[in-house]
Length: 320
Image (tube, rainbow, N blue to C red; front, side):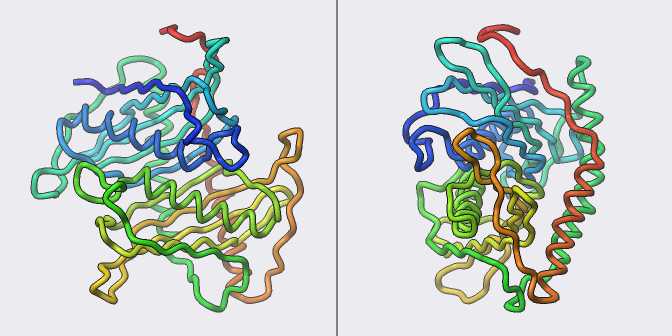
């Protein structure tokens, strides 16, 4: 039984954003979901679904042609759930020195043939690093429930006046996972795209994601569903834009929408030197605007109280 999965490949021209140089965040989110899924399936021995993605930190840009290593490892198990830590490291192929580019936590649920949760083997840490990651993840499992409830309690109505962006399209067969639904990585890419469009419209410049949190997968998206994503900016810092994204879907033959995914993501604009530049500040014109602004500040506070997960920093290609 394997509790670690590593994928290694080159970042391709089809992965980059409009600048033609750096890989878009949405593509990286697809990578982490694939590695996490492979790890969860390898450990549980059956089909799994993504239930949650959080603590997504983008620490450095990934460039076209970089050598990429995505490592997923089990760090905690429940009855049918698996907490998986995923790290993305990137290296110039000429130097072969891997440096951290992104890290996050995913939760998967093992499913039986009737798509019902099924038990997974109990996991125990086997080394010091795994034990440290397990302790840090345990703390987040407890905090996650409170953050989820806090996010779901917020009201997003027409009373809000802050910038928003909406996408709507059909989920296509190319988006399918092995279970016949749109896989989590594709949904996360959609989230990044709509949030980035919202951020760029506000700052008038290119924008990049630096953090995503509280990506809760509530219901599946079926192939052929009408998918609607709405991104709303709810808070600005001196250099940051905090954007809430909600995803819903429906059968084209029905008027009944179901909420499928929600999350909070943070974008910045960078100057020519790569530093985060100042962004225009939101004007909070309604009670809903002010409530959501306070909500974003509260989420930042809650997450800042959690101890950061510890990862290895830099290593040569091929090292243990």
